[in-house]
Amino acid sequence: MSNQIRTRMAPSPTGEMHVGSMATLLKNYAYAKKYSGQFILRIEDTDKEREVPGGVQAIQEVIRRYGLDWDEGPGKGGDYGPYIQSERLAIYQREVQQLLDNDKAYYCFCSKERLAAVKEQQLAAKVAPRYDGHCRHLTQDEAKTRVEAGESYVIRLKVPENQEIVFTDLLRGEIRFHSNLIDDQVLLKSDGYPTYHLAVVIDDHLMEITHIMRGEEWISSTPKHVLLYQAFGWEVPTFAHIPVFLNPDGKGKMSKRKGMVSAISFLERGYLPEAMLNFFMILGWAKSDQEEVMSLQEYIREFEPSDLSSNSVAFDLVKLNWLNGVYIRKLSLEELADRIKPFVPAAFPSQKLMAVLPLIQERLVTLADFADLTKFFYGTISYDATVLLKKATPELVIMQLQQTVSLLQAMNTWDTATIETAIRQLQEEKDWHKGQYFMMLRLAVTGEKATPPLFETMQVIGKDVVLERLQQALTLLQKL
Ligand code: GLU
Image 1 (cartoon, rainbow, N blue to C red):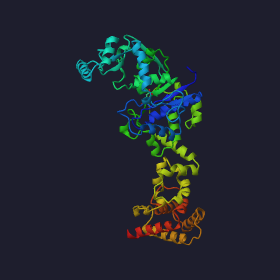
Image 2: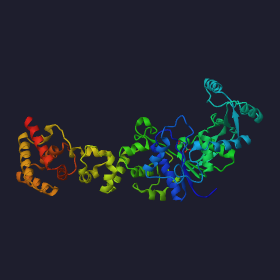
Image 3: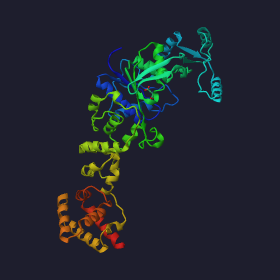
Image 4: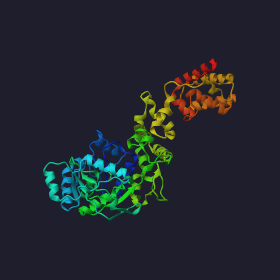
């Protein structure tokens, strides 16, 4: 075995990648990079029934869209391939033969009906359902004859009796399981496909994976894997089982039912991949002196699996939104323009984009907020006219609007400074209440109470449209 660190992510193409998986992937990636090792992407596609079309492509695409990459795997090659399990069937069949030869595994010919009947009896007797070992004691010759006669079979692991299985988890220390509680599970299915347990162990071994960091939902599978490593006589890699995320409210495992949990869906909702990665970095990381905003390079330098908390943490949307804002504000206007393109509504006048972006950059929580924050820069606005009458009589507001219209109409230059000077002068001359007048004007021009700075906004909206909207306000008030 080489002494290089080799980590892996082994997703199944059974649906969109969950944010929890992306967070786990990041840890495997960072650990390999930290020690100049390799990060391997392996596709675990042995469950053909659950596979979704395009699933293998989608996995690769989402990893790349998050700005990460793999050293070996699909599309990349490497010395340990193929990296797609369905292309490795001959390897599993060859390796499982070793287990049969060494009496560590056995052929099982039990029919579905028999297995169902056994399960039913066990449930009726209130014992945990498991394989009853019916075929465990067939001699090799008997089995061979039946195989040759064409009988359908699976291959099961011969789990040793009365044995304690111990392994170390980097987050939890020693974990013990008793072998008597472990089923003689199927390793090779009747269609010649391996089960997850068999394939994962063979591949992690043959690909010389040194550290397996995966979701904690796999912890109960690990003793089975340890038994398999022992049965093969292979060295057991180091394990770290990473807690799952809880829902943002801290209640229950973050699940599809409570919203969109796929890694890609966050990008589609306007989260920046670098903000997502930073969020994954700090979530559940128990190092107390750590900065919250950190780059991938810093994370790679700092990351140690043993610094991860073994408790599940909530997927804190407030923190994610804050981080996303931090990263949006770090972008140059050109970068922001580029990233925000998919979120710009078709009706938005594109020649205004570069003028609008500096006005909203501070206020974007996600890129998708663009539509809402900019709708008054184009198109029509609507509001209830009575909002214009806050702290003023209709007569006063009508007069204010008329005088503002005359002032603006007479202006030859239309830029922020000129608009601002003129309007402030008018307000001072007439001694209008500042708060009342400016808020009324903001509402008349945009239809909104909260907008970017008024004069910049007026400049970008343009003289004609501003005048039109002031006229619209006058008409509305005169109808009241
Ligand atoms: N194929 C498994 C999954 O989809 C991999 C589990 C593991 O990392 O061992 O998550």
